[in-house]
Image (tube, rainbow over all chains, first blue to last red; front, side, top):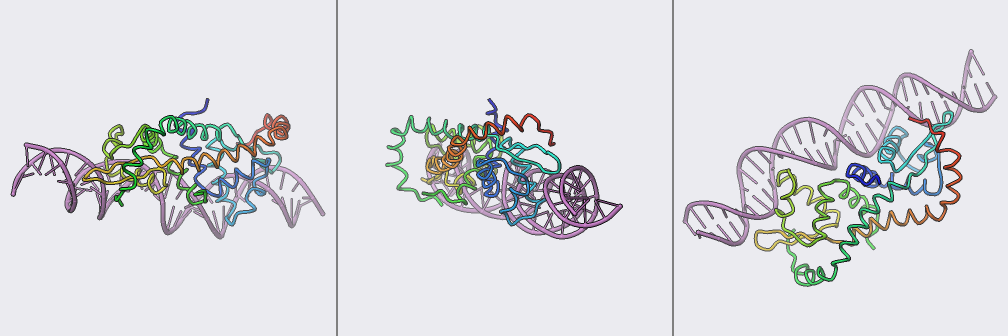
Amino acid sequence: MANNIASLDSAFHALADPTRRAVISRLITGPASVSELAQPFAIGLPTFLKHLKVLEDSGLVGSGKTGRVRVCHLQPARLAAAESWIAEQRAIWEGRADRLAAYVENHIHKEQGQ
Amino acid sequence: MANNIASLDSAFHALADPTRRAVISRLITGPASVSELAQPFAIGLPTFLKHLKVLEDSGLVGSGKTGRVRVCHLQPARLAAAESWIAEQRAIWEGRADRLAAYVENHIHKEQGQ
DNA sequence: ACAATAGTTCGCCATATGGCAAACAATATC
DNA sequence: GATATTGTTTGCCATATGGCGAACTATTGT
């Protein structure tokens, strides 16, 4: 399972940008060429290619070139890995949510730290 | 629902660092003070406080100061929001996974792009 | 051959990030 | 009241990020 630290770093980093999340959303509906993907955004192609590189480096997106056009597609395994990390944390959290509830009742409402 | 673009940006950004993910994992087991949280890491307090600020700015972590000690706690709503974004994408993906399977069969194995 | 199209690479810039040490609160403790 | 503890702020630095335009490569179409 590609669930190591470095791949989570790069996967979450890739997701931390609205352009890149939009690309993922688009790719979920099916593969697309670079210029197709770039078309909705008001940024230059070189800049867009950097985003694409971040996505490919993270393993969230793969691509292949046929002729002069590069077709990109989603690689959902890494997306699943990122989701799993959060899901695991939430599972632990929910396992002890009852104990936490007491703490919240006692402390949260008194917060004054900036 | 705090599911807007900016909060996803900052939530994913906060998650894109092993130190910060470790802090979250620690906080899931219960609240802790700043120095308690910082103790496992080989970085200075000022640096650690920057990570903490990123976590607080993202809404993943909250804190309150009593006396000279600041106690931090998890704020699971934002974690859930981040997980939801991924889960939604995966739901769409899985809804059309059959159609995609054909594409993968035909194209992925022929990839030659850098 | 030539021109158009699709991507890519290069150099530049401003800002953000992640690290440090040092100085500075503010609060407990002796 | 002096001292230790716990955070915090301030400056500084190197590197990464996200943007640009310009130049270049490689295919496809005429």
